[in-house]
Amino acid sequence: MNSCMLSDVTLHQAAKSGEFNLSFKEKIEIAKLLDKLNISVIEAAGIENTKVDSLLIKSMAAAIHDSILSVPVKMSTQGVQEAWEAVKSARHPRLRVCVPVSPVQMEYLCHKKGPEILKAIETTVMAAKALCPDVEFSAQDATRAEEEFLHSAIATAIAAGATTVTLCDSAGILLPDEFVCFLKKVAQAVPQMQTVAMGASCSNAMGVATACSFAALQTGCREVKVAAAAEEATPLEALAQIIRTRGDSFQLETTVRFTQLQRSLKQIKWIAQSKRTKTSAFDTLVSEAEHGEIALTEFDDQAAVNKAVAYLGYDLSEEDSAKVFEEFCRIAGKKSVGAKELDAIVASVALQVPPTYLLESYVINSGSVFNASAHIQLKKGEKVLCGICVGDGPIDAAFLAIEQIIGHHYELDDFQIQAVTEGHEAMGSALIRLRSNGKLYSGRGISTDIIGSSIRAYVNALNKIVYEEN
Image 1 (cartoon, rainbow, N blue to C red):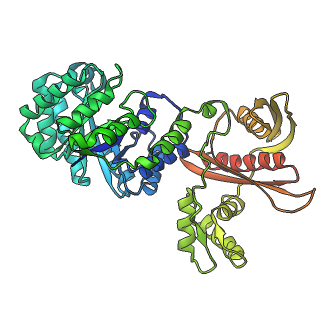
Image 2 (image 1 turned 90 degrees about the horizontal axis):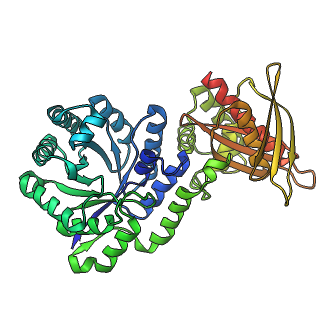
Image 3 (image 1 turned 90 degrees about the vertical axis):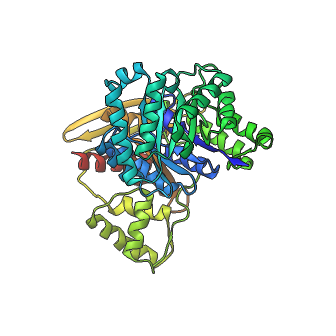
């Protein structure tokens, strides 16, 4: 049996096409779900914002256990180094060199002629190979390239160290039989193709990507691009089911865990297709406890606590780390400390700053027959700022009103509510985690009114962001 690798492009396509809007945490959750499915390769988006995108890739690297994590590189030595620094901690890292090879796209996207592109391919692939043993060369729009130039580009990439060569029908213009002929012709014209893994990527513009991808696997391709949610690529579910049903007939098998396929794909599509990320302050749709495995005791030292804090996503100074450890020691003497307790400790003692915004007042209207609304007043210096918004519930409306006042949306990474005392007059504690430029800031609020405690927690986290970024 020939094992075929499925390379999922959902996260890459989402960033490239803007097909759906995903939060930082949702991207990591999709990567984790694909890893649980045992997808061979997970393709991350490229690095545009160095700080945020690098942190996202590093977070994915920590979350992925079995799959290869593939990161595209910019066509420069610096771009290769930047991508490698982000992905090198992954168990199975891969650098992906994506280069347009059709005359139109070379001119339009790269503003370069053929000889310059060949030189760029050689330089970039060699730089990637010097850092990472697994390097993919992806020939974008290969089916519309000039044959002689395409063959030269592939030979150049292989000579420079590429271990996988992917041929892309980016426009989706070929039918299955035509695509097979194209692949065979390239393999015959470039003898070096026998020394590397050949891959295929098919656009679903005409709705035949699944058939083209399966035909490519029958032809000898080792790897094909699929998508769990994106519409432009070969649907993962359709191709996986064909391999499951007819794979034996063609000596093909895949590592996908079919027993988990339906459930995982349903979760991924729900995360990707939900419109809540565009209409609500609550843009984190992940409901599973992400850090439940953290369990610290009084016998753990500061290094262990710092590691757990970093695992939660915080980047603290030495001074704040010392404060967190001091508070941890006080609490750990009475009980074990899990993720929620550690979150609360960070929110309570780390990065305590002079408040830029103070909560002046709030009025909330909510009921079963009309949409919830919030009227929030924040004080900044001597100026009172007002925001009025309607939302999906009173807390959502309150957060949207605050966003209206400050003129900025921060990704809501986590939101927790719990009672800290008992009885009718119980005190409620709210914990908020906001993400700005990839970094987490937590805030905590306490009140007998749970909506009030949530607003105070949000403002507390907001003040930390404003203070540090200014």
